[in-house]
Image (cartoon, rainbow, N blue to C red; front, side, top):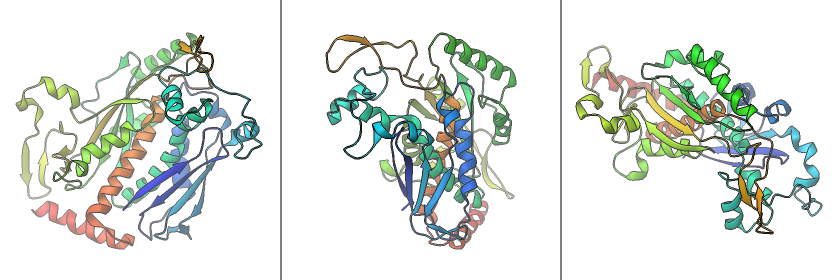
Length: 385
């Protein structure tokens, strides 16, 4: 079974991830992970933290000679800002708990409900872990899953559809179009809309506000038959949407046509089935987003996610001090104006991980050659059935 855990606080010494279940024999280097960590840090509207941190991974277990061993893989990302927070965030009794204490919860953040749940009088204990900084560890994990999938010919990518009030129609976007998004400071394929999105972010920054948006993740060349309809928790669309929904700030996830399909007749929604001897069954449309009945159908997997505006605002909202119960302005932590593009990279990581899980559930294999052989055999079956 493929699974992972992460640990670490936003201003702690490091982030750690442990991945279990990757087969032995997968070629993997730190640079495979670092290039995705770098993508996560890019984007117009990111905050000061990105100028402090240059995320680099240190592989501390599970790999020898550039190949996975089949044992758990451990990854470490050091926080360069730790040197400024060591006195406050130390694990021992020497920690200065009276310094940088947070008692003014931010609306829209985990501050207040987390403080109530875990009985923290200092909300820093909540925000340090609830922070989106944790997604750096997820991107590292997803990078390993991405390398595994790419070895099998399965590709993952994303792009931004909207930021604030600026959006464009992505209905005709194919996986091959995603390369152009990497040239955009907001990961938008449309160059004209890119400029409008940048202006939208600049306006929000001047006003001490923040912006959300929508991104789309695509999985290309995914074999049919991943997931299952036999139990609710084995439906792959549910597992994928849960994984993307777990990213901080995400408030909605849809597959394929999503909510738009609810207002259309079935004849305009469902994807007609065709067949030829060269490729077997295929569709001319993909409103299902590559998933039917909780199972991949061989078409491109398409997921779309809506990210709310970041809850840390320079012009902060009204709140209540949890010690005095008096009205105050919410606490202000260093933050981004917009991070939809960063969330998109994290979305890729989560989709990659769940698809890798599903591949290993179907094909198994303790060594990569076993997986290659089983997937190749199944691909041949797909074309002939």
